[in-house]
Amino acid sequence: MTAMPSMTFSNIATIFRRELRSYFNSPVAYVVIVVFLAIVGWFFTSNLFLVNIASMRIVFELVPWVFLFFVPAITMRLLAEEQKSGTLELLATKPVRDVEIVLGKFLAAWTLLAAALIPTLIYLITIVVLGSPDIGPVITGYVGLLLMGAVYIAIGLWASSLTENQIVAFILSFLIILAFFMLDKVLIYVPEGLVTTFEFLGIDYHYSNIARGVIDSRNVIYFGSLLGFSLLLATVSLERRKW
Amino acid sequence: MSITVRNLTKVYGEQKAIDDISFDVKTGEILGFLGPNGAGKTTTMKIFTCYMPPTSGTVEVDGLSIYDHSLEVRKKIGYLPEMNPLYLDMNVLDYLEYSARLHGPRGSRMQNRIKEMVHVCGLEEVRHKDIGELSKGYRQRVGLAQAMIHEPEVLILDEPTSGLDPNQIVEIRNLIKHLGIAKTVILSTHILTEVQATCNRVLIINEGKIVADGSPEQLQREFHGAESLTLEIKTDSAEPVAQLLPRLRTLPTITQATLLSQNGPVSRFELHADKGTDIRESVFRLAVAEGWVMLELHRKTTTLEDIFHKLTTS
Image 1: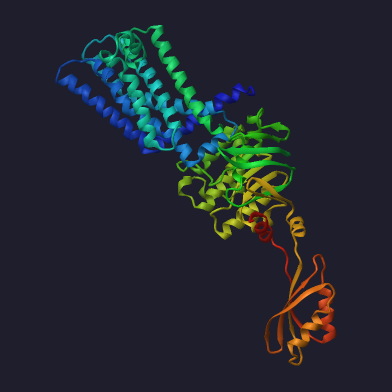
Image 2: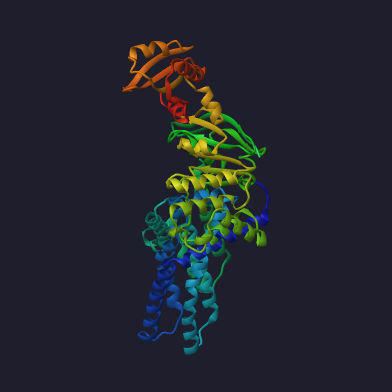
């Protein structure tokens, strides 16, 4: 590898910009964001008016479930389509490293996810107006959602690199994400010796910790390593054309 | 900008797509890569552009190995892949800017270069349109424009005219010729007239091996068979054919003379002579001496089609 660190960032930025623009040029981004907000909004308002609880907790409990569908929907296209249309060949024969392609696309999807979360701040404002919530867990809750989203996107990107078919990519990433999400919810079926391992591997365990306002280095390391590993898998998978 | 290929082999599973090929390409050459479908043309181009590595052998572009200097090699190459894949949801200008940015030129230099390519490739009218709305001919021009956006020293074009109508083919060919000045161009095709029209060197590849290499003229000379002429003459009196043929057979080096058709005083013959001889002058002198009116004299030349057919079917 030749060292040209200055190029690296600009390539990532170029790919990021194209990908983000392509999200907002097509109806997909809008549809997905609207559905996402409709689901979260419906639960939030029914909680607010029917149960009379003004709390962000419902949002932070619900969004991880919505992410199970939301993230595969925004990542399925990313590499599958490039492989199907042949544009990957065009991209990979430009002076761009495979890891730059992966990172640019990852950042674009993550930005879209963050953009989808921004309108939920309206609920926060509502709550602030109605009562006096504890702001600390709200901030860590958002941090948790962003971390969890990042890991999901990296997994989705890997799934998208494995196939030319977007539907297959969607199902694959949904199943992998679901497996990580359910790990700490099936503990009663797990042999006693493995309970702590399963719990530690479960993504929701770490997310819940963070969302409660406890940011432990263990949680951060967990998210960081899962994120790095998934991005690495996606990069390696792009390089498999060379095998 | 030279390209050096040594002992290049690519194996897919059991099948050898390219089998130990070696050749050099020099600056200014427009090399036509010719071969039937599945001969290994696309595979070779994918290796040159660092899309995938060969199983064994080396390729050096301007002395830089595709293994150790992949990014540098890719910077020097402009590539139009087979089927011309494009982002259909981008408009022409955005797409060209995207391609330019990935290659490096920035700022006003980049903008000037984009303007230049839009002009050279005749994209002014469609520059704000989405690529998905463009006709095949325009898409091909966009493909060429992106391949040349960074002023590459080497252009690699995989079937640049496939799927175009005859007018578009002529346009794209002229464009390639015009752009190929002072560059190294490698283009693959299975259209033979294209090679004759654009290339100054031909490489015929079959089943992963090079079977012919040289300029179109060289190949024609090399693979030229026995002389063959068609002759049409008008004789004064309706002479019996039986008397015409023996006289034609007196021509030097002639091996065979046959009557193709006769219509009143007009007779048509096919003449064969030894390889490498030109008997047109003797035919003319004979006609003058005999008092025949020569209506047609045509010398058949070996076409690239003949050579191609001969080399790739056996």
